[in-house]
Length: 292
Length: 274
Image 1 (tube, rainbow over the protein chains, first blue to last red):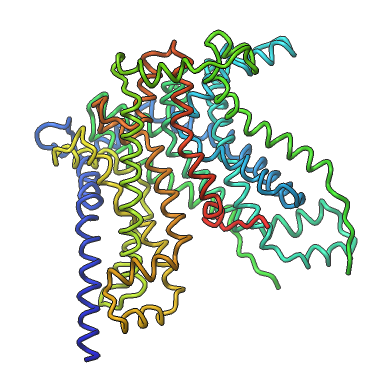
Image 2: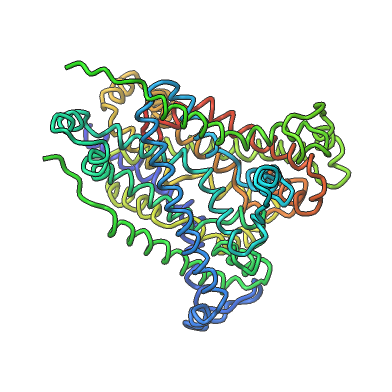
C-alpha cells in the first residue's frame, strides 16, 4: 500500500515536471539554443544561418556605437545610482523617524513605481519640454530654461531623474525594512555611551543595513541594462546617440536593420556585462553581517 | 526605561513636502487631461474643465485607425489571461516542488533556480524567431503564451507551501480529495498573500509590457494600450490633450490594482508600516 502510494506520487511529480519542462523546452530552451547559434552566425531572418565563428563579436568590439552605448551605460549609472541611493536612504531614514502618516508617505512615493513605462515617458517628456511647466516655472522665477531632453549631456541626466522618481519609493521601502530589522537595543546602548546621531548612523545603521543596500544596488544595476521604453519614447536614442541603450540597439539592429544574428551576440554580451556588474557590486559592497 | 522623544517636526515637514513633489506629476497629468488644450502648459488650475480629450479618445480615434477602446479591452484581456494562468500554473508547480516526493525533484528545483539567472531581454530576438516559426505573429497568443508559466511564481509558491504543515494535505486525502482539489481548495487559500503578490507583479508586468508587444504586434486592432498609445504619440504628437488622456487611461488600472493590493505589495518587499 505504502509503496503504491509512493509510486503514485512519483508519477504525479513527473507529470507536473514534464508539463513544466515541455513548456520550458519550447519557450526557453529553443530560444536559448537559437541565441547561441545566432550569435555565431550571419542571418537575416530568411534561409539558414551561416556560421561565421567569432566574427560578430570581433565586429562588436570594434564598433564605435557599441562603445558609445557602453559609455552611456556607465554615464547613466554614475548619475542614477548615487542619486537613487542617497534619496531612497534619506526617505527610509525619514520614514523610520516619523511614525505618523506612514502609510500616506509610503504610498505617495510607491505609487510612482506602478506608473506605466509608456505613460510616464509621455508625462515627463511634457513636464520637461521646452515650454513645459518645469521650464516655465524656472523662467518665471530664475529667468532661465533648461533644455532637458535636447542637450546631449542633459538628456541622459533627465532620464536618470525620471527613473529615480519611479524607484525611490520602492528602494526606500526595501531599505526601510532593513532599518526595522536592526535591534533597537543597539541604539539605546549607544545613546548610553553618549554617541551622536552621526556616529550612530555610520557605526550601527550603515554596517547593519548592508544586505538591504546590496539588494537595492543589484536591482539598480539590473535595471540599467534593461532600459528601453524611456529613450525609445522620448529621445529615440539621441541627441548624438547619447541616450542610446543596449536594449534600443538590440531592438533596432534586429527588427529595423534586419540583422538578428548581430543583435543576438549583442544580447549575449549585454547579459554577460550585467552579470559581471552585479558580481562586481557584490564583491565591492556585500559584507558578512553578524551581531556578536 | 522611558524615553520622551520630541515629535520630529522638521523631518515630518520635509517628508510631507517631498511626498507632494513626488505625486505632483500624477496630478499634473490628471488635471491636464481635463484642461482645454491652450491651458495645458500655461495653468495648473484651468479656467474650465473639459471632457473633449476623452471624447476624442473614445469616439474619434477610430477614424485615425487608433482604436483606443479596442486597445483598452485588448490590454485587459491579455493581462487578465496571463495573470490567471500564471498564478494557477505557479500554484501547481509550487505544490510539486514543495509537497510531492518524487525522484528528480531536487534537479527540477535547481533547474527553476537556474532559469531565473537569465535576464529576459537576452531571449527577445530568438523568442521572436520561435513565434514567427509557429506562425503566431500578430496574434494574442504571441503576447500571452510566453508568459503563462513563471519560474519566479513557481518558486514563490514553493517557498510558501514549504511552511504549511503536511497535516492539511493528509486530512484532505483522508476526506478523499484529489490533487486538483488539494491545490486549489486547501493549499491556495492558505497561500493567499503569495498568490496576491505573484498576481500583482504578473499583472503589472503584463499591463506595462511594451517592448515585446511592440515587436510581435503590428495589427492596430489587436494592440495592447501601451503600444497603441506609443504609436499615437509618435504620429499625432500635436494632439497633446488626447495623448495625456490616453496616458491617464493607461495608468489608472495599475494604480487602482496597486492601491487595492498595497498590503501584499508591501509584503512582497517585506515591509510592515505599523
